[in-house]
Image 1: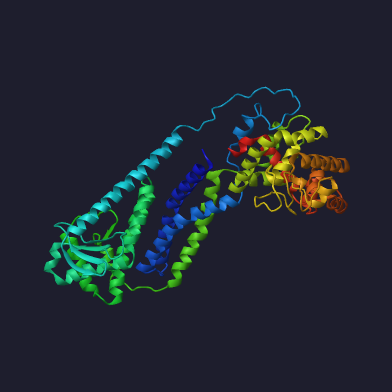
Image 2: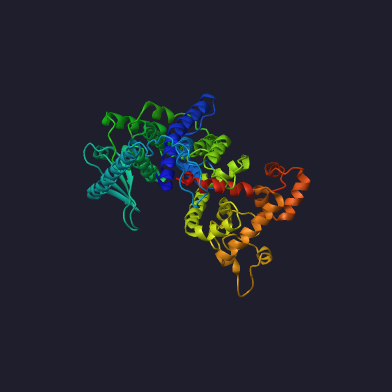
Length: 538
């Protein structure tokens, strides 16, 4: 599964989870406020419902964006990486000295169960089919409404007379300017009652004012994308009910209608249409009245605007960690210290650069494999390293150095020959250099490279690699420890000498923990683990 498809699957599952959690939480919060004697008005409840819809759709997108920047763990199973690969490691990008091959571990099937892609395809096809059907019905509805007789037109809103048995409803269509885009449909029987006609038209126009007809498309997309999810249909029905109550409240509190007359209109509509009629796709209508709607007309209307923002803020505080956690769990998990140590032992060629796994190496490993930026950098590095291998390996061999030092070039430049002004990233902290090994001018000149206005030998890969091999050999001879030599490669020998004096230890982990050295050596060792185990980026 590609990274893009994996992210889409993670986003979809996170949305499904929030759909199952967010609406019940909001409904419970509103019920508790009402029981505590601090109920919200119908219009405030509608704002909460729409806020829940916005949080449900927006938080997974925010979590996905954060997940792309913050490590959430490599997307691999440890069993797949170690248990199945320990005896049959992928061929390294260099040629290590001959080693005795370990017994091959039994191979398990590497492919995903076929039911998973089949289920994903079924969900995609089903969702597209249902939404396409709904939009076709919506287009047919527009043609039908254009053919109905018009009672009145106000701007781009047309009041039309429906067919016999058709309920009152309102619908909006995205259309070009100067064309009717909003409709109010009234039953023919209302022509005999002027007051009922007026109240029905006011009710449906209020739906347009509240943008209920616009948001009907959002509910349509939601139920189409999650046609299998009961919570999606429940949220859509809840929002439809809140819209009706908000319309009723807005008309009565504005003074445009009298509560008793409006209640009588609702009752007449109930008697005229004893069964709740099905509304067309994307339409919002005067749904079957209920006792609760009529009772609401005569109840006091609380006005606590701050209650809405406080409730939505509380819901956001609950749902945001859930979305982030779900995004991380679905996308992958972080490798532990024990797992990384086992992976290092299983992939260690004899006589090559040892990987000393500590908490810093694990953190850098998860950052490189668990974020899109880290994964993209390492994939580019592995591709470049394959083409540069021979040029980079020969000077290291000539100096008798371990070939795992190629990881330095990986971290410095993604094994890319770059000038100082190149905008592509480097994972090495400190002053930016040039070339594959990112030499700064002072170090380059000290090891025999010309860096002038007319010539920069740091961009000669063969010459720069010879200089890098000489520098690394000198540093290892000075410190007798590869991690300290790597730290000196990045921070300089003076900095490492000062760290040794201040820290009272020659253990690089201790010096990094104390803040005397940065984590450059840990980053190189994490990069080397990935070079030796490229399947970590699968």
